[in-house]
Structures are given as structure tokens and as C-alpha cells.
Image 1 (cartoon, one colour):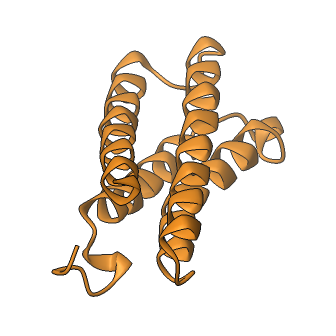
Image 2 (cartoon, one colour):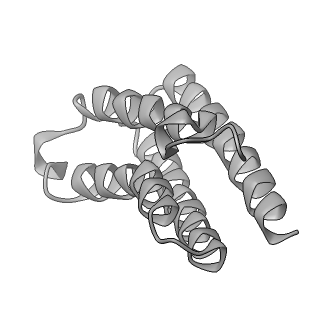
Length: 120
């Protein structure tokens, strides 16, 4: 990771930021009564993904960094559950759900690879 000067240089962080925007845009159409329910919870969990990647990179130790990457992965899993629930409740159409979950899967693989690399 000697080429990495900042968390902003990490492709996984960049993709997570794009995913946040994608989720925010998609959740704008959720029912108004969900504004303080599922919408807020989904947005909070998805924002946690790039936030924890960034925070972990600034912690100073590899052990701490790995821990925050694991937290980011947990937030991603939480968001995936909320996305699937949003789809089941008919808040998200099939195409958006598939696109978002595909991005989630890619980010999950990247987080797993980074965790494995740092753990070696």
C-alpha cells in the first residue's frame, strides 16, 4: 500500500462514496412516513461504510485499521439487509435493487481483500 497516500486514493473508498450517492438518490422516492424510519436507517448505515474506511486509515495501527474495515463491512451488510427490505416493501424497483446490491457485493469483495492483505 506504499502507493496509497490517503484513504481517498483507495478504490474501495471511492466506490463506497458512489454507493452512498446512489442510495441517497434511490431513497428519495421512499414514502414520507419512512423518512425517520427505514430511509434514515439505510442512509446512516451506508454512510458508515466510507466513513469507517477513512477513520480506520487514520488510526495509526494496522490492527485498528483492520477493525474499522471490519466495521465498514458490517455496516455494508446492514445496508444490504435494509435494501432488500426496501425492495420487499416495494420502495425500490428490481433494477435499482440489483444495481445497488451489485455495488455492495463489489465493495464487500474489495473490503475482504484489503482486510486479508493487511492481516498477512
